[in-house]
Length: 360
Ligand SMILES: Cc1ncc(COP(=O)(O)O)c(C=O)c1O
Image 1 (cartoon, rainbow, N blue to C red):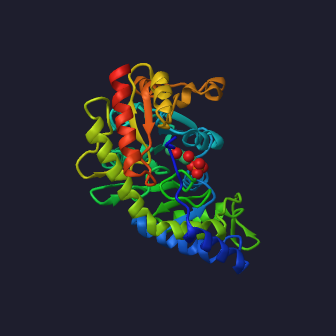
Image 2 (cartoon, rainbow, N blue to C red):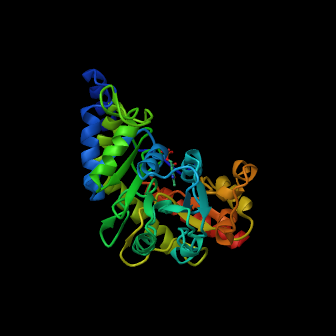
Image 3 (cartoon, rainbow, N blue to C red):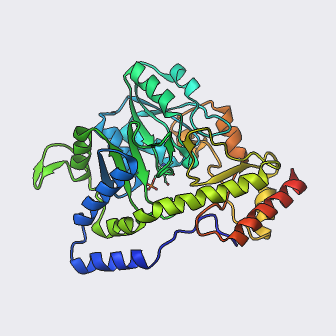
């Protein structure tokens, strides 16, 4: 079966981990500092703070901006659970705005009508590796004095006219194994505002400004030097991995565009294809079964909106986002990762065409 994801971990990463272990510096140390510096350079930001997951990155960014219980945070319901969970954990309320049906990202034209006196932040998600319309979102945020946290967990090195995501406002990234680069588990917050990143470093480390001097309430959300060592070995590969994803996606789009809805890429936008998502407008379960029979693994990101998750229904969080619901019913992700061979890629395209002809 051609898998939907395949983390590429090799000798470089193994050596880096062995070296970190041999150094005796296992918790946060020099590797983390170097990884932060290098990841900030990738994102064109003045700083990056490494943490132990993408969820931690988003959580810390909201906390450092002062988002608190009772505030409202505007976001998309068509995303991974973590996006809304960090809002809910703070005691703030996620307010859902519908997506554009072609990009799957939050529709900026619908944001302003969701703003209330309680709105504190906008959290756009660069879903599947495609940048949200950040110029439009930043304009709205500035007009209404709102902070912006970009959920860039799936979008390392995605950009608009050369400006990377995570540099428009502050960004939260994930280095989970299936992401475009990995540290095992891990995350980072990117920003230009050094006071803001200072706060994040404090909250990341039990609220301590320096050792045993606590100035705020905090957590232990630190990245270890072992994980940072993996990240340092992966970073030089981000660009070749990304180019392979983009080339794989271009091939799939050329083959599949006449048979299904393929991803859109606007002028100046760099889609980094964390996922390559098509639509099965009907019979999605049959598409999945037929593709599996032909040896092609698929994924559904995501099968229900956040407000249709049993937990969110139970606590009375609501939403009315028909495009998100339609996407949740129809989307299907195909393998696009950099480990695919040419033969595998061809097989993915041939199989999807055969299934589309059969099932429509
Ligand atoms: C859109 C989005 N937000 C947040 C996260 C959370 O990242 P992590 O799994 O590293 O906590 C993920 C990753 O799975 C994600 O895809």
